[in-house]
Amino acid sequence: MADEVGAVSPHLDDLALSCASFLAAHPGSHMVTTFAGGPEAVDPLPAWDADSGAFLPGADVVGERRHEDLLASATLGASSHHLGHWDWQYRDPTYGYDGPTKRSELANGISGELASLVDALELDTWVIPLGLVHPDHQATASGCLNVASSHPEIDWLVYEDLPYAQVFPSEMERATARLLEQGFTLSPALGLEFEFPIGDPIKQRAIECYRSQLGPLGEGVDLAVTTPERIHRLLRVHN
Image (cartoon, rainbow, N blue to C red; front, side, top):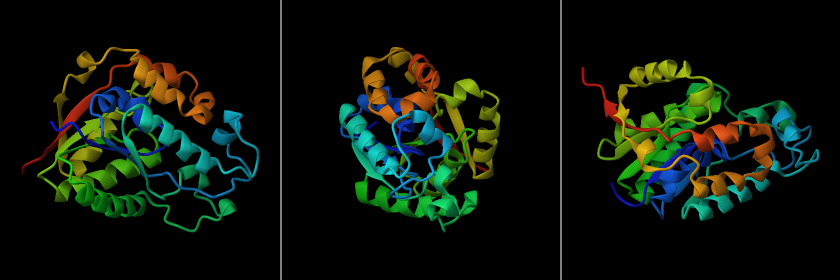
C-alpha cells in the first residue's frame, strides 16, 4: 500500500474518530470531508451546536469547525479538503438551504466532486466510510461507492464508523446490505486493530482538535479512542 492515501469523512471529525491511527501511519494523506458546508451564520443554533457550549446564535460554526479540521489534519501529517455539502442539521429553509435533500441526490453530488478529486490526486488507495446510522454517513458511503465503481484500479478500503459501530452493532448488517445493492462486499478485517494500540496518543490529540465537538460527542470520544480501528478491503461482487 502506498504511504499516501485518500480518506473520505462525512463530517468534520469522523476520520479522527474512526481511523486517525491509520492516517497517522500514512503521512502525506488527504482528508476529504463531504458535509463541510453550511450557513455563514447559524441562528438559531441546532441542538448539536447549542450543546457544544462554544457558540452563540449567529456564529460562523462551520468556519470554526473547518479550522478545527485543519488543526487535526496537521496533527496527523495530512491535508484537508472541504466539500461544500451542507450538514444535515442545516438542510432546512430556516438557514437558507435550497439544495437537495434526498440521499440519492446528495450521493450523486458527492460522487461527482469526489471523482474529480480522485482523478486529480492520483492516489492508489482510498479509505471510505461504511456508512452507519447517520443519513450523511449513508449518503457519503453511497457516493464513494459510485466512484469506486468507475475506478477499479484503485485499492478501496472501508472503515467502520466510530463510535456508531460500537453503539449500534446491528447497523453493520444494514450497511453491508447497502453495499451489496451497489455491487460490493467486504473482505474480513485487515487486522489494523492489531497494529495500532488502543488509546493511541496521536489519535487522542487529533480528536481533541475538534474542541467544539467534544461536548456533544460525550462518551463517544472514549469509545472511539478505546475501540480498535477496523478497516476492510472493498471487493466487487461478481455475478
